[in-house]
Length: 563
Figure 1 (spheres, one colour):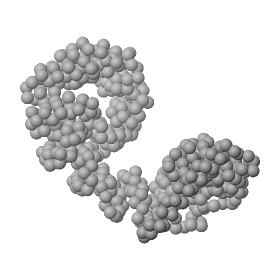
Figure 2 (cartoon, rainbow, N blue to C red):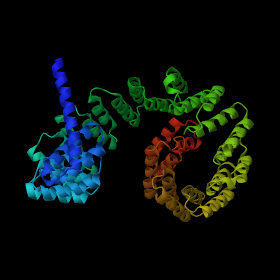
Figure 3 (cartoon, rainbow, N blue to C red):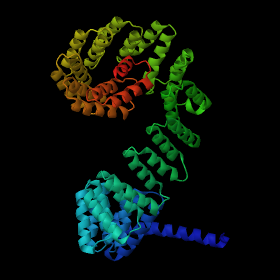
Figure 4 (tube, rainbow, N blue to C red):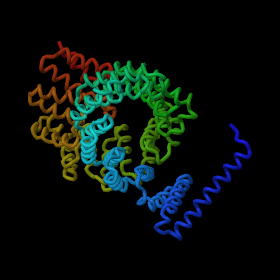
């Protein structure tokens, strides 16, 4: 609706008059304040507070309001000041002011509620609980405060008390989906999956449009590794946005259905164009050794994907796997030196030079970088090992040992060369002992030496003691768990061996950083099953190894030996 010109003119004049009046009142307030002029002083500063707030001058508004606050006798004016303090996040000041406000207006419920919220923000959970109890005694129970109590008990991990208050709310409000969701969270934290699912489903039935309730139910199924149940929940969420599609893709991947996982990650990428979904697609393709498909996907979306150094690294790796080393070198060379992907790109660039017969150039490139980062010497040694130049690899580490911050790691690395490639057990033990003398808390060294003592039947008990030290530092490391399990196997305690080897395999399978091509844990587990007469389980493990690695000699021989 358009105002007539006269009306507009009137409004403008009125506003100018009010601002002028406020300005004059403020001058008057500052120069001629007497007791009988109190009302003029209050009015002037009250108007100025709102002008400052309107103009975004919050600090000035606060100072002006503080002048007149002592004269205010109604809760409304206290609430105005509380709003200013809340907006500026002055929680300590607000804490004290609310306590003062409660003393002055003991029947004002809103002040109690605000003070409890401030205690929660400040992390003073016990004080918040005490304040709620004071409120409940004074005013009786209320749903709002029962909910606050429940949430506080949840934060303090006292789920029994939280459940008690949540159920009190449901007695009066049985159709509150949020309360059912809180109950589901409490039961989940108590480890009662059945009740957690029951209450999570109720919250969805009461509000099927709140996506968070469905996501939470799916997460409960995921914790139980019931991936297909989680997928069913996600598929009911409408619309199917990129986050939901990606969640479905993740669950299919965890359930072992990579084909379906790829389909949903591709849909998520098509909808959003986000790099994280492209990375998941490429991870699966690379893991499936579908290098050409990975290259095609990157080249199809190169204008958006090749802005990322992480994607460039994958592109270079896929090219090198398809013997296109020249182009791979070009891609690796375009990765930013400050990028997280740079170090891996540098190593793979050197590998590419080695593959095209330029090993000397590969080592020259790495040596330049090693001046600023001694860890690069390990890369040089790896290149030499791939060329079966084991003694040269030892020499490059030995000659630069002073440059390493923690000198136990180069000794550990040299011990591995002696044992794995030069088959010199005694030298390996000597170097592992040197490493542990420098750093007795090097868990890798403790485990390696312990495993040698066990596997080589040197001193099984001493070996197990060393492995146990390593496990205290890294309790979920699958290879340390495997070493201990193997120790029990060597001692003939197959029940204990089985316990630790199963833990080792679970830890390996649940963490993508561990190498799937290394089947030492699976082989140890198969041997243990054979010892306790469970040939069918041993066979299943060995067949699984050979599906992934057809040329695994130990798995083949062991499988042949089973009658």
